[in-house]
Amino acid sequence: MQIELFTLPEKQIDTSKPIIDVFTDGATEGVNDRSLTTHIGIGVFIPQIDVHYSERLEGISNNEAEYEAVLAGMKILIEEGYDQARFFCDSNIVVYGASGRSPKKTKHKKMQEYREKCRELREAFSYIDFTWIPRDKNYEADRLSKLNLIKG
Image (cartoon, rainbow, N blue to C red; front, side, top):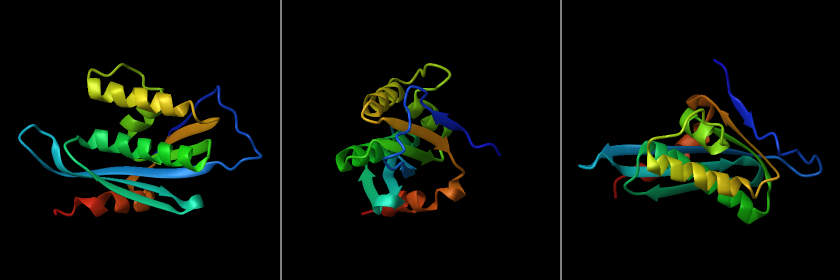
């Protein structure tokens, strides 16, 4: 299995600052009459700064949940003042889209909007890359994303 790494070439690593590793995941359960999942959770795990973030969302697809997790991770780092990051995600669609390296335009307006949001937030980083990892290597983000699937 090959792990894909996307580094934005115009961004250079500043060795005097830390590169923060961010693991993200989205989880969904159930479908309503509009084919949107009814229970959605996102998880963000940032071990270097001890972030274990979990949030419940409503009425979005699994791919949208994956993007929401990446966006949440990006916002956390920006708020904390970090501008160098490596994101690890088990969704190839999100890795390609968030990195801006997607090989083709999407037909789905919502996915294009998520790509644009990621592009805007990438500007706040002096260095950022996105790597696909297998689900079993993304355990803590996966666990965090599922915390909010409990019906309540």
